[in-house]
Length: 304
Image (cartoon, helix red, strand yellow):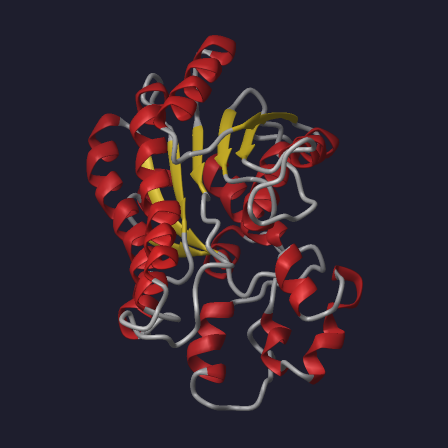
């Protein structure tokens, strides 16, 4: 198996489950050493109270062919993040890939609820989890990433800049959080580009995360059973798909051409030629605009 990232050091911040786990595993499959962080461990769960743990993610990274290292970290605590980065510096002397995938807001937002009716504490915590954590992590990790040229920073969000510019996303707090991360990548591109590194914003499509599958009462092996009640779920993708997008970016010697850009898993699949685990190439954001949001019946022909 080709391992174009062998010898590379990655930090996937927020790798307990979902996209973060998929990214960590695919970086491992490409040969990288991957530090995986989060608050859910085998001895302590976060407020999500779910079974996925960073130790499990690290094990999957190693099984895939890389080296997974689990480090419990609350990315709202600057001291913990500083300790994490110091450990990577001591153990590896470098950081080549930083993926800011910290989120943690699924249980905090209410759909289509105006700001004056939304729970204020929950809304402000969404902003702290989705924005402040990314800023703290970049502040402490980027000096290490810049020790060698060619570093890559991936800011994970929901939606492309084009889609989010024209579409109201869930509610005030969610919309602000996801758009802020897009702007982070743009700003980091200006700061990192002249110093030999690249920053991008990246979104998966409709993600078949552990929580999404559970919400629809299905598993990965029978996910199509959900289509009877949610037909547009047919465009969905596994977390490994966006993981392959990150691995492709990290292995691209010309990755700087994307600096500051807003990218999607489906768009990058067309560029780099990778597929999802089933061999398809779902292009969710084009589908959402041209089919779902246009009010057409679910039909993924030409979109995966």
